[in-house]
Length: 141
Image (cartoon, rainbow, N blue to C red):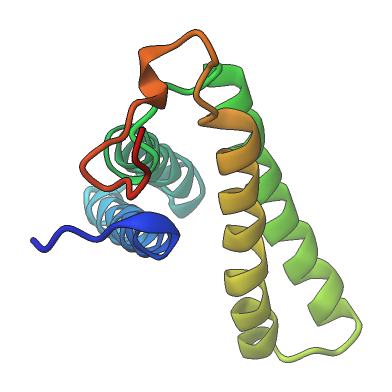
């Protein structure tokens, strides 16, 4: 895989990680439903599988940094879920077609999540060796 540097590379890696998490969610959901699990708990279990893909992808590939805390990561993921759900309810309640609402939210919620993960969750500590350049970093020291 080519080495993608800088902010654009980070955003592309974030998007690819999101696609991997989405495919994981869809695949796990299909497997669980096929196995006879009711769709509601199956969706919850599949969502948790996707969260693991998201966490490990962001931790080791997208941001290449330890999170400041697991609760912060969980809070951002939880806020994303709430925003997605509440947004879909609100937008469709006022008459927006589901496809348009989904499209809008599929851009807005990951944008919020990226910014929150970057600014609040995967922030290198000043006293940490994590502030050293990585293979994806274009900074020089």
